[in-house]
Length: 125
View 1 (tube, rainbow, N blue to C red):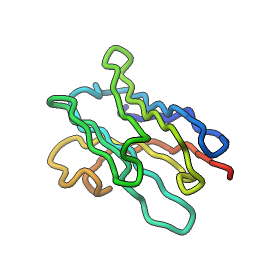
View 2: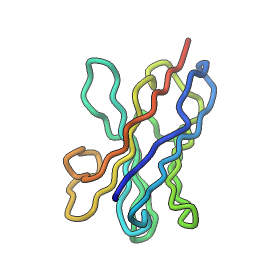
View 3: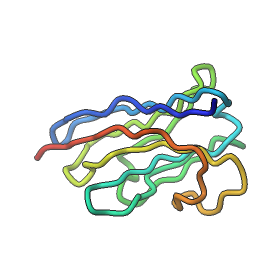
View 4: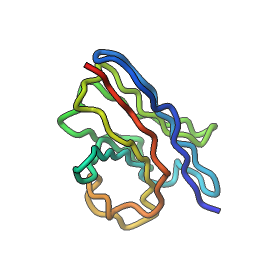
Protein backbone atom coordinates (compact mmCIF):
# COMPACT_ATOMS: atom_id res chain seq x y z
CA UNK A 1 0.00 0.00 0.00
CA UNK A 2 1.37 3.38 -1.06
CA UNK A 3 1.17 5.78 1.85
CA UNK A 4 2.63 9.02 3.23
CA UNK A 5 2.48 9.90 6.91
CA UNK A 6 3.36 13.36 8.24
CA UNK A 7 4.40 14.14 11.78
CA UNK A 8 6.07 16.90 13.74
CA UNK A 9 3.41 19.57 13.78
CA UNK A 10 2.44 21.44 16.90
CA UNK A 11 2.07 24.77 18.63
CA UNK A 12 5.05 27.12 18.65
CA UNK A 13 5.62 30.78 19.36
CA UNK A 14 6.53 33.19 16.61
CA UNK A 15 10.24 33.00 15.90
CA UNK A 16 10.41 29.34 16.88
CA UNK A 17 11.15 26.24 14.85
CA UNK A 18 9.56 22.94 13.95
CA UNK A 19 10.67 20.02 11.82
CA UNK A 20 8.03 18.14 9.89
CA UNK A 21 8.60 14.58 8.71
CA UNK A 22 7.00 12.75 5.80
CA UNK A 23 7.58 9.01 5.88
CA UNK A 24 6.68 6.86 2.90
CA UNK A 25 5.63 3.24 2.79
CA UNK A 26 5.00 1.07 -0.23
CA UNK A 27 7.39 3.02 -2.44
CA UNK A 28 10.79 4.72 -2.35
CA UNK A 29 10.71 8.48 -1.97
CA UNK A 30 13.99 9.01 -3.75
CA UNK A 31 12.47 8.06 -7.12
CA UNK A 32 9.82 10.77 -7.06
CA UNK A 33 9.33 14.49 -6.65
CA UNK A 34 8.05 15.18 -3.13
CA UNK A 35 6.24 18.37 -2.29
CA UNK A 36 5.06 20.10 0.86
CA UNK A 37 1.82 22.03 0.76
CA UNK A 38 -0.15 23.89 3.37
CA UNK A 39 -3.73 24.95 3.73
CA UNK A 40 -4.86 27.66 6.11
CA UNK A 41 -8.54 27.93 7.09
CA UNK A 42 -10.58 29.35 4.24
CA UNK A 43 -7.66 29.32 1.82
CA UNK A 44 -6.51 27.16 -1.07
CA UNK A 45 -3.62 24.75 -0.88
CA UNK A 46 -0.32 26.58 -1.19
CA UNK A 47 2.83 24.97 -2.48
CA UNK A 48 5.57 25.45 0.12
CA UNK A 49 8.53 23.45 -1.17
CA UNK A 50 9.56 20.43 -3.17
CA UNK A 51 12.59 18.22 -3.66
CA UNK A 52 13.31 16.54 -6.97
CA UNK A 53 14.15 12.88 -7.40
CA UNK A 54 16.83 13.30 -10.04
CA UNK A 55 19.42 15.52 -8.40
CA UNK A 56 17.82 16.49 -5.12
CA UNK A 57 17.39 20.09 -6.19
CA UNK A 58 14.79 22.08 -4.32
CA UNK A 59 12.17 24.76 -4.80
CA UNK A 60 10.57 27.13 -2.31
CA UNK A 61 7.69 29.51 -2.23
CA UNK A 62 8.81 33.12 -1.85
CA UNK A 63 6.95 33.32 1.46
CA UNK A 64 9.21 30.70 3.07
CA UNK A 65 12.49 31.14 1.19
CA UNK A 66 15.38 31.55 3.60
CA UNK A 67 13.36 30.19 6.55
CA UNK A 68 12.35 26.67 5.48
CA UNK A 69 14.61 23.87 4.28
CA UNK A 70 13.51 20.64 2.62
CA UNK A 71 15.70 17.55 2.77
CA UNK A 72 15.52 13.83 2.17
CA UNK A 73 16.90 10.81 4.04
CA UNK A 74 16.79 7.91 1.62
CA UNK A 75 17.78 5.37 4.28
CA UNK A 76 14.75 6.35 6.34
CA UNK A 77 12.55 6.86 3.28
CA UNK A 78 11.61 10.21 4.78
CA UNK A 79 11.46 13.82 3.61
CA UNK A 80 11.79 16.63 6.14
CA UNK A 81 10.73 20.24 6.23
CA UNK A 82 12.77 22.27 8.69
CA UNK A 83 10.85 25.45 9.50
CA UNK A 84 12.70 28.27 11.25
CA UNK A 85 11.70 31.79 12.24
CA UNK A 86 8.06 30.80 12.10
CA UNK A 87 5.42 33.48 11.73
CA UNK A 88 1.71 33.47 12.64
CA UNK A 89 0.91 33.44 8.92
CA UNK A 90 2.61 30.04 8.66
CA UNK A 91 -0.28 28.57 10.64
CA UNK A 92 -1.89 25.85 8.51
CA UNK A 93 -2.31 22.14 8.01
CA UNK A 94 0.82 20.91 6.26
CA UNK A 95 0.70 18.05 3.78
CA UNK A 96 3.37 16.14 1.94
CA UNK A 97 2.64 14.67 -1.46
CA UNK A 98 4.36 12.53 -4.07
CA UNK A 99 4.37 13.07 -7.81
CA UNK A 100 4.49 9.56 -9.22
CA UNK A 101 5.07 10.80 -12.74
CA UNK A 102 4.16 13.43 -15.30
CA UNK A 103 3.21 16.11 -12.82
CA UNK A 104 3.45 19.70 -14.02
CA UNK A 105 4.60 22.69 -11.98
CA UNK A 106 5.78 21.78 -8.51
CA UNK A 107 3.46 24.22 -6.74
CA UNK A 108 0.30 22.86 -8.39
CA UNK A 109 -1.45 20.32 -6.18
CA UNK A 110 -2.83 18.45 -9.20
CA UNK A 111 0.76 17.47 -10.04
CA UNK A 112 0.78 15.06 -7.09
CA UNK A 113 -0.83 11.65 -6.80
CA UNK A 114 -0.32 10.48 -3.23
CA UNK A 115 -1.04 12.67 -0.19
CA UNK A 116 -0.52 12.35 3.51
CA UNK A 117 -3.21 13.07 6.08
CA UNK A 118 -1.69 16.39 7.14
CA UNK A 119 -0.23 17.76 10.34
CA UNK A 120 -1.33 20.97 12.07
CA UNK A 121 1.15 23.77 12.61
CA UNK A 122 0.03 26.66 14.78
CA UNK A 123 2.24 29.69 15.36
CA UNK A 124 1.18 32.04 18.12
CA UNK A 125 2.09 35.72 18.14
